[in-house]
Image 1 (cartoon, rainbow, N blue to C red):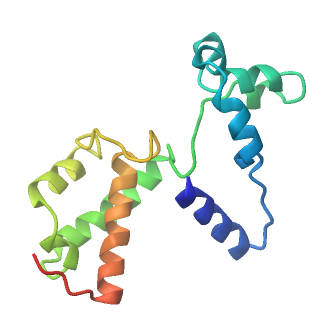
Image 2 (spheres, helix red, strand yellow; image 1 turned 90 degrees about the vertical axis):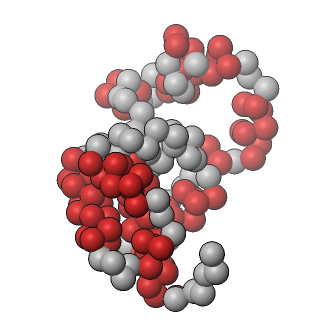
Length: 151
């Protein structure tokens, strides 16, 4: 959560937007913590209770739409770009991240469009395409700061 909040805040400020995160109020979180899962997942849907209480004041296309958590994207262009970036890094023998990775595993992730990575972190948010983007970011960080890593 802290990563998502920090990232959304930075992106908003960079673009001159003021954003609010109403569901991050600690009082709401404390109250909802004690609600049984069966109520939270009303009618077998994620965010079922929220959908139910929102139906009278939000349009159905918002209430009933498929959950699409930030920063995950279902856009095929996103997958294509991060795959291209990571492929380029893996082809560069001098890329610093290549000394830290299991090359065969990363190539398997690339060859399966991320499907070989089956254990997401940060809940369901981070899967294959997001892992590819993360590895690209780690490589950029390693190039910029040149830390000395002893293995």
